[in-house]
Image (cartoon, rainbow, N blue to C red):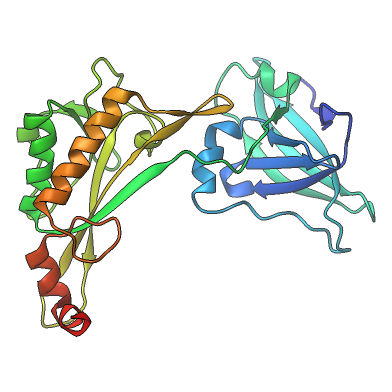
Length: 290
């Protein structure tokens, strides 16, 4: 099939846009001259995750203008599906044209990308609420937390080893020593499919346990281990942000309560540190703070 060119047009009829693009992630947001927002192509699938690192940078022409006409150039496979979409901008003020991004499409069907290249979104800056707890732990602390979720709360556990697919496992199959080797996902919701992607806890009812990050503060001390526990209170569903189920939120709250009881506060916000390990690593600072 021959290439196809399409000029982006907002539902209000405007063809002039402020443009925010993150080309390496193939994500974009267009805001028309009337103030209406639209996600570009399939950006909605990744938009919430992109916002975790801040808003994509707004395009500006060398002449200083921030308004552009946007043309999409579609390249098709022999099957008729879209192979790539080139994003080409033309400055509203000086008419300078420039290729801005290339979206590579690796799925099927793709008719909607051609039929509706702009995906209206009313509140693009809203983000689902998420929680992250950091913890200076010894390896047995990570094991204790995982066993609490599985044994006491009845959670299923999924293991994700880098370069390998995720798979359900038993707590006995997990190697916590000398340190955790794989990212773990816990859920109390039965019947879920094995998740895909790098961050299933951002879109599904999972608590993620991962790390550790090695912390070396002084050469005369053994390194410390910083673990992370995170989950989402809300997830993106289509154009909406919705709460996780009450069943999962109760499960997550039980985990948080256990952490707060097992590991009393050390002064760090959103933390669940082993007090002895924290004192070993930051003893001088702890003393100076008192």
